[in-house]
Length: 224
Image 1 (cartoon, helix red, strand yellow):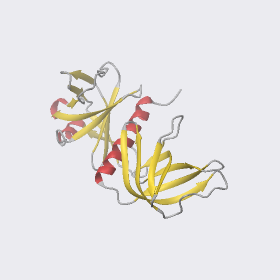
Image 2 (cartoon, helix red, strand yellow):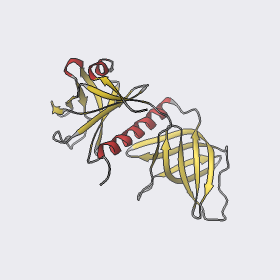
Image 3 (cartoon, rainbow, N blue to C red):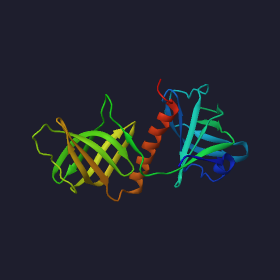
């Protein structure tokens, strides 16, 4: 199902100030996470607070897209203009309508690349390490080095704890997961971990990470 159109004034009217943040992204794959601190529904604009200590100013001449989430899904729209007020506050002028996309748990993002992300986790008394292959709100795909005919250190339905990694400056820590599937290539084991009753703060961190990544890909547009 594609996005639906929602009046921006209605979207802004229900935002709770200082309890909601948003993402700004442009085609240079720059992404900022900003707090929404002021709202003016009739003027279709949001007052955004930049994190303390950020030295590089936001380029207001670039083409930006803004999005934020609520419990039902994500809102997204092109920014008409950005107007800095001081070192911390910037006003984002929004279009008359924004796209609304219902949240889907099944979105899975591939994370492989030239600089793989390390993942560590505990399996009983053993501490294991691997590399992140993909991520969703339901689990992780990881790669564990192990040439044939070595045995995989995990089996289906095994419990693992304290899965930890950091991606795009988002630290992620999942307290509990189980092994959903295992496959082997000549050079490694591919293991799928399914989250087990993740806490709300764990899910919030995952949603922020996935949404930030999705925003970056969307803003960068199709490759030439």
